[in-house]
Image (cartoon, rainbow, N blue to C red):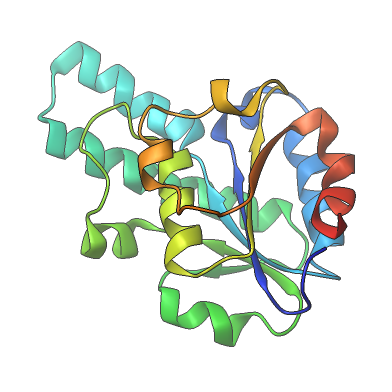
Length: 190
């Protein structure tokens, strides 16, 4: 059961943008959940990170350049999510999250400034926004981490190779396929 006022971190995968209507369904579910919970949404990179990957494959980038460009892709996707989640507010610094959210609400993190300052993730394609969300959840002492993915499936098979190294010990986490997002409230209340 979610404690009143405790923060829940929800990572919304960038791959959802490839499925027509998925962002709207997830946005409505998060807006609804934000009426009863404090949610911090961490964006994936989606098509913006895919553009960085394609450029890296075609032109070659250093590991550092590719990493920071992919992190900036998460910022771009954050703006998309703010538009798709009614009432959501964009935040860029961890210190503004508490002031932005009261006892309920939805904030979407544009994480590049924070992740640049902390620089805790490996600079390779094995660390994705899943690991970034795990870091954020741990740093904010979140109650739970939920990863919303393009498809459902076994949670451990859907995360990146660095996720387990970044995830705080004892932090409850789960994955939901976007088609299962109607189960979000039950998950948060259960």
